[in-house]
Image (cartoon, rainbow, N blue to C red; front, side):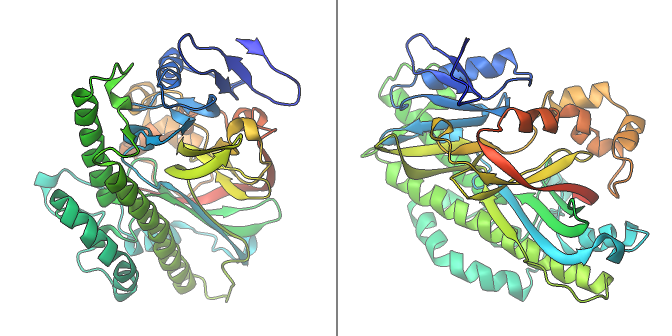
Length: 412
C-alpha cells in the first residue's frame, strides 16, 4: 500500500497485470479474500482507470460488495449481482418523537401485516413474502412495467415463470428492512431497504449463466469465472442491458409502493395528520449505468455502493442497533462519484449465528422495537463494521445531512 495525497482519503494498491485499486478503508477491517476479489476485478482487460473500494467492502459472490467497477464497452453481470437495483428509500415526516405511541409493538405488528416479507423454501407452501392477490395499487404500478417485461420474456421465456407481479411492493428477507427512525432534531423518518425481488434474481441468475457460457466459448483467461462479461456487440449484451434496466426500474417502483403502503399503515395507527415526503431519497446500491468519468463513457457497476455526485442525496444505513445517515455527495472523481452503501459485514451469517446468542442480540438492540428471536441473530449489530469508522473513512466522498436512529425495525 502507498499513501496518496491529503486531498483524498484513499490508499492505492497497485495490482500486477491490472489497474490500481483505490481503497477508502482507513480504520476499517478488510478481509484478505475481499482484497483478492478486488485484484481479480482489477485484472480484467475491460476495466477502466482503477477499481474503487468503499469502506464497507467485504467478500461477495464474483465481485466484492462495496466496490465500484468501471468498464469500457462491457458489463459484468455477476458484479451487478442477482439483487438488481437493491437500494434504499427514506422519507422525512412532520411527525415528531412525542407523536409516536409509548408502546411501539402494535405499530411494528401493523407494518408486518401490511407488507409481505420473509421467505420459506418452495416445498413448504405459499411464499409469505409475496401477495396472494396483489391490491389494486400494486396492479396499477405493475401495468407500467408489464409491457416491457413481456417483451423480455419473449426473448428469454424462462423469465416468465418467476415471482414478478406478486413480488411488487414486498420486502424480501435477509438484510432487507423497514424502519421508523428519529433524526437529530426529533423528526420521524420512514426508511426501507429492498430490491427487485424474485424477478430480479431470475434475470441476474439467467444472464450470469449466459455470460459464463459466452466466456467459455471465447476461451477468455478470467481470474474468476464469476467475472465473465458481455462485450458490446456480443449476442446477449443488448438483452442484458434491457433486462437489468427493467429490473432496476422494478426495484425503484417496489420501494415506492412499499413506502406508500407503510405511510398508509402508520396513518391508521397514529391519528395525528402528517406530511410524509418533506425530504425523500430513493437510491440504488446494486446496479449498472452508463456515465462519463475522466473524459470516457463507461459502464459503472456499483455493487454495494451509492452514487454520490456533488449535491446528490444518498442513504448509508447502519445495522439494526446503530445510526444511519442521510448524506450529500461531494462528487469525488477518484471514487467515480460514489460512497458506501452501509456498514458492511465483518463476518458471514453462519459465523454470526455461531458466535452470538439471542441474549446478545436482545442486548445489542435495546430500545429498538424489533424481532428478538434466533432467526435474526445473523443481523446482530456486531456482525457489521462500526458505522462511525465507515463514515470517518469517507469524509472526502460525502457530508452528513441527517443522523437517524431507528425505534422500530421490521426485518424480512
